[in-house]
Amino acid sequence: MEYALGIDLGGTNVKAIAVTNGARVLAEISLPTGGAESTKWKAAVRRAKGEIETRTGHPPLWIGVVAPGLPARDQRSIAFLPGRLPGLEGLDWQDFFAFERAVPVLNDAQAALLGEVWLGAARDSHNTVLLTLGTGVGGAAQVDGRLLRGHLGRAGHLGHISLNPAGARDIVRTPGSLEDAIGDCTVALRTGGRFSSTAELVAACVRGDSYARRVWHESIRALAAAIASLINVLDPQTIIIGGGIAKCGATLFVPLRRQLARFEWRPGGARVRLAPAELGDRAGAFGSAWHAMNFHG
Amino acid sequence: MEYALGIDLGGTNVKAIAVTNGARVLAEISLPTGGAESTKWKAAVRRAKGEIETRTGHPPLWIGVVAPGLPARDQRSIAFLPGRLPGLEGLDWQDFFAFERAVPVLNDAQAALLGEVWLGAARDSHNTVLLTLGTGVGGAAQVDGRLLRGHLGRAGHLGHISLNPAGARDIVRTPGSLEDAIGDCTVALRTGGRFSSTAELVAACVRGDSYARRVWHESIRALAAAIASLINVLDPQTIIIGGGIAKCGATLFVPLRRQLARFEWRPGGARVRLAPAELGDRAGAFGSAWHAMNFHG
Image 1 (tube, rainbow over the protein chains, first blue to last red):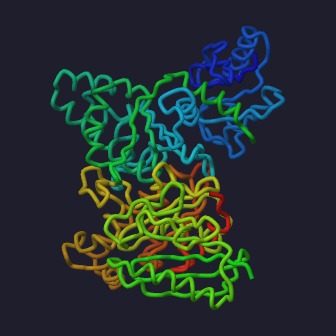
Image 2 (cartoon, rainbow over the protein chains, first blue to last red):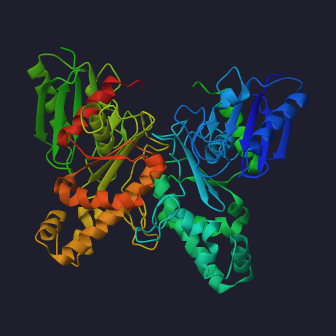
């Protein structure tokens, strides 16, 4: 049976899924990469592909890759990823696999967005924004049916929008960014060291800790303002929230919807659908498989 | 000679340009509309078209329209414009002209962007952001060669991004928006009534007024933070600044470039080109003419 192989390469694991164009999963595997600092990830990727081929009995018809960093404009490689996964920057994935077709590369959020549009929370949506709330804040955007890529391939870095021009600059120099307003990376900073993760902070909110609630609601207000901005810039039909922090469920979504009701521009009463991601850590592999099947590079 | 008619309908004037696909202007006219509160604008539009046909000796092959408001998804009309230019909302422009081809409609900033890409400051750019700084802050964006439209046609409302979630909400409810941080509409508010227009404020800066300089530079910092955000979301090659405030020239661009050097993410040293608009008040008519020639609705 014909299938696409979606390979999702992260710092600790490589996940591979064999999926048909009818979304039937034929095989699935996850292997440790050996860490983001070594080159062992290459062997892990080859092993994952080999294992999938053994299980399905034949090689894939298409291969798509998800990896961290900025994909090159021709989508054959990751053009920019300083300091992690040595050997990834500039690697041509079609060459790496000696494959007969182009092997398109997406970043994590782009692939997750395409996966959610194909099989998850944004099925059949043509205008979609994805935000992943975790250590940092990732993002991707689809407008008028197409994934935004942009001049360098960095379009959709939605965590790096400023909510305070006078604020401290984040890892890409955005002052007072969304990422720093809600990402796990700044919880200790935002709470004067009282909490070290969003999970702890939110648990304290649930217990009724008023300090924790104040901090959390300020982060939610920042997120709502950022989402209102993205609505005005990208005009999505659906906004998907994924990542570890999205697992807070109602503790996130109830106050977020309340703030958004204050900030969202609703011309003629129209409002954007806000939904949690559905595919979890398989979104990227599904999205890259779909992208490979539909790629005309 | 075959030509496209670009019609730019504003609150006070309607401008019409007959232009060939080789960018030769055959005729050009501007007529008063009779004000945004009456329906006289319809007669003015018909008169402008008639006058152009008299001068060129024959009717246009294509017609494109620019008007305020949100264009409908099929681009045949303005779907949403409360309270101004009565009769415009919902008017089908192909019907209005009884024309044989579709008459696509764009909003001001979208048309100006396409004009600048065709003949102005962003020639041959495939990833372009336009900001118009005037009474309010308008915007439009082209990504990967296509004008962003979005689910409701509101994509590119770049003035309505939040720079302060705790700030006052603007006309579309965005808290602490870019529009309110630099638009002419808030100069009096931002200066405690000391200045009533950006021109006055900037003139005081040039004279060395330290209060004016502090206010102006805070607005510039907000603009730079917003531009850095838009770079991360839309990844343009070129950012065009138009509108009345852009006429401040060096008093705007010198401090703006300085702030942007602090806030812009420059992966691998890449930086975005920042340029003043070149086509002035003809940009919209040119852009709508180009759009009509290239429209496949």
